[in-house]
Image (cartoon, rainbow, N blue to C red; front, top):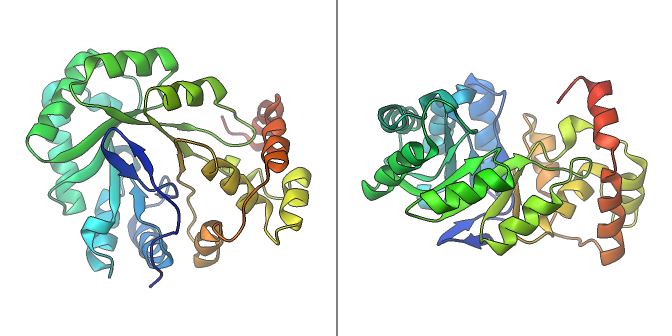
Length: 277
């Protein structure tokens, strides 16, 4: 078993969020369990799941069967937007904990803005779960600056994270600046742009001088930014371990800028070609 990664966590609102996490979207059952077990053995200590993913039970089994102590793993799950009403937040989170076989989760996010209930009601219920010791920290996902600002105003406890799509082709400059100013972690999902970074000429060129691949450069670019964590997902041991081989090199200021320049409108073209949002 590999030790935890040698990089300081994102320290926000009393939370210590490991900068490199493991995403589990679109993985279920035994595939998900094996992937999470592999990730934990490779050094990942931040595991992301959600009610929407239908894999909390598999994640829970992987954690239970791992040699890594529970208190070393930062576990994140998310309330489905359809469960935004107070009683639904409380009940669905209780069920999430049951599926995960955990007494508490380290971070509970609202998966996306919801029209099912006022945000004040949703966050109030999430704060109740903190008071009851079922949830350590709360946050949001897919929130704009304006929505995040409102959440910060309404929550009785710090909003420690906003999980959004962020990769070299899909920039979040203004949101990241706001998160840094307000002590919020920006967690990047789809950090490899649904695989689009593979074979990118500029990323490949930057990686060549470090003996690294284009995806590794894309992930390193994210991790070197303040207040950013990233949750790449992979199912094979090779990709899980490759995505974690990020701590024996560092991008220069010029290389960081070069990667940043990929964002100018390119994602719209790539998304259309790949058939993704």
